[in-house]
Image (cartoon, rainbow, N blue to C red; front, side):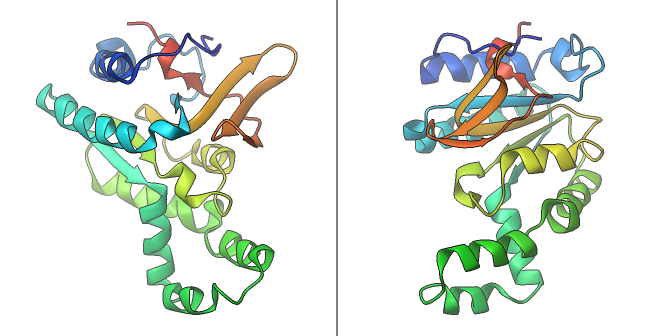
Length: 204
């Protein structure tokens, strides 16, 4: 399924590869995926996060000039919106310094639960904005309150019509012996997730 790690791209090579892929008819028509959900991981070294964010914004602009509409969603921005809408953002900021990290983590995980709160928010954005492809970013900023594999598992029934690309600061590997693994920042084992394609291996 093309999930093995490809030799490392330079940032420029990665940007050009992504542009070729997301503007291709094969990608947009979800060809070559079998019956799998059209989910793609774009892994990149965590130290390149700022540059990759710039590249992602440029990619959105270039793709739209080519007639491909991109719905860009930041997990961090969505989390902040949820906290504001539930009127608890200020409370969390007030108690953060004096609260045990594990307690704060448990609180935020409950408030930002993907199934109950985050996925409905993403679903509303999908319904409200015509698009050909979805970009998900902000993964590193919301860890460990929101875990990538939880988002993808819960998103399968909501984002199945257009290809979805998760920009992941770390590595995504798929090996017969160990299965699939999302390793955030190249250090933290986020969890196993099997149903996504490494977009750096996608051929057009």
